[in-house]
Image 1: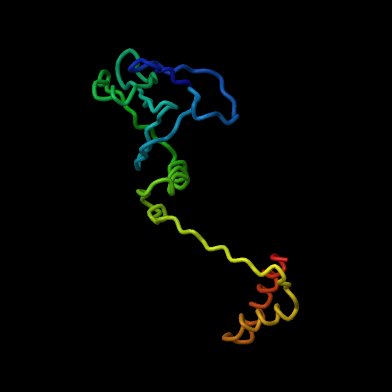
Image 2 (image 1 turned 90 degrees about the vertical axis):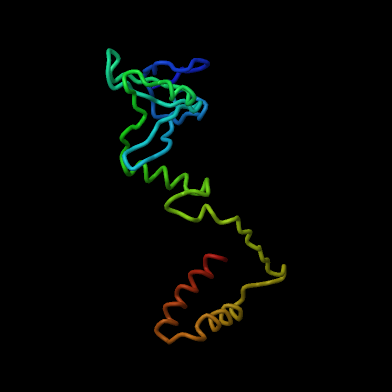
Length: 164
């Protein structure tokens, strides 16, 4: 499905064979689900033109794309831009774009300002010796009971092993 609106206000969609290879966002075959609702979403092409389908008339069910500025005048044959989209796809789109803006309805993380983590370095002569491991272990288990200490020690050993 290719969009060829170009400099026109609207144009019919062209159909062609496709493959599963990833395409660029600047490709006439690129489509994006945009403005999702509970029922579905609106599809836009690589230039932001909106996919429409006529609901009545001799071209009933035929797909075409229009420029957003043309939507107000595009009323002949009651076209629609709302496409029923699988709920899982809508959830996936919301998830992948959630942190791109500050208005995501399910995740307030996008509203937080960036937090820079301070990188701490060890002295160049530091060696993770058995003494250091015992010292760190004693700190880790200093306020917990014996059964939990054994479990935490096992986790601690795995943690230390992954750092060496």
